[in-house]
Amino acid sequence: MENTETAALPAAFRRIGWSNLAAQFSEQIALAAAPLAAVLLLAAGPAETGWLQTAQTLPFLLLSIPAGLMVDRASRRSLMVGTEALRALSLLAIPLLLAAGGLDLNRLALLGALGAVGTVCYSVAAPAFVPSVVPRARLAEANRWLELARSVAYAGGPALGGALVGWIGVSTAYGLAAALSILAVLFLAGLPRDEPPSGPRRHLLHDLGEGARFAVGHDLLRPILLTAVFFNISWFVFQAVYVAYAVQNLGLTATEVGVTLGIYGAGMIVGAALAPAIARRVSFGTLILIGPCFGFCAAGVMLATLWLPSIHLVGASFFLFGVGPIIWTISTMTLRQAVTPNAMLGRVSALIMTATFGARPLGAAIGATVAAHLGIAACLALAAAGFLVQLLVIGFSRVPRLRDLSEIA
Image 1 (tube, helix red, strand yellow):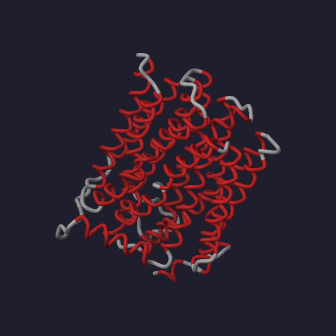
Image 2: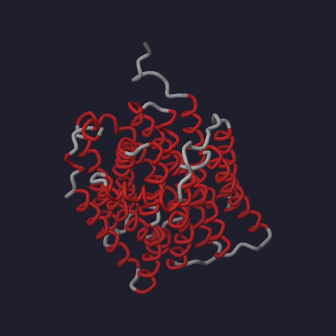
Image 3: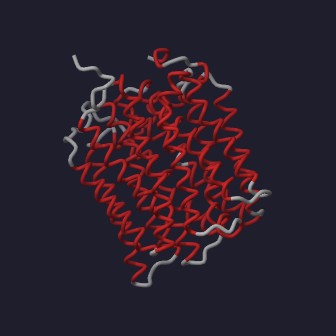
């Protein structure tokens, strides 16, 4: 009999993995290019880049639940293909507008929001798709490979996007992002056809309520949900002003901004690579706790740059932000897949994404408002306080006491 520990993961999963890598690279290049284009070409300041971040993350708040309902009712493959194609078109439109002299902050924000629709649907559909092609015993391994691909994209995408903007221009960065998004579509189109989930069609509100009651009522999912909400609000309070802070206060170039964002991805690669070894040495609950601990430490290091402005401290902060939270993502996704019935995974994933990723535009709006009225230092302090709250929420829950997945089977 083939050893499941060494056997290759199914071919369908490998296609998901390659499409995930291309899509994540596309997204990260575009996310790095957008605020740089706003600051360097459109003379945007901290408040304007904050509102740009708000617009680009708003689809996570508005569309996650509808996407989750579609995932549990329609073909997951078709949904991922269609919305990734939409992202490719939105990315292609930006260099075309720039060439025609028609790019402004509002259009940049609108096209960024359209591109985020693809990210929302992919992020909801993929966790629901994976358990249907990967055995439960290998879910953690599959999730680690998906997150490792995302980590590589987070490491290389921002640095590449920043370098392209600084060396060649915005159009080149967006052109490469669009090409990668098209490549992701081709990988997804090669997945086997999946049929919509069978069973009687129920009222949308009934399905939504069922998923919400399960996620909020589960004593392991609830603290994870709350922790992720506070993490994402705090992260985007900081992200809303980081590029303007780095360029205007720390004196970093576009390339250096891309490098610091790339260090975040390097931290994710290290975290994803070390996750199996760490998991063998600590309990499952401790593994989950690592992310919030590292997030709080990273926020403290970034706060110190107010008094000790240094690209090295910035890089150390982003590295810590990458290492811990990627371990959190892998472990909590595995937990969610283990405790949630497959027929409900789309809705539960969507509700968690709405509450967590939906916190991003809220955090970006808070960051923009605080920056406009109180300054960047207040934003960094507020973000650090939020990272302390997310650590306390998970630390005082039952989650850190979990020894392994057998306790939740």
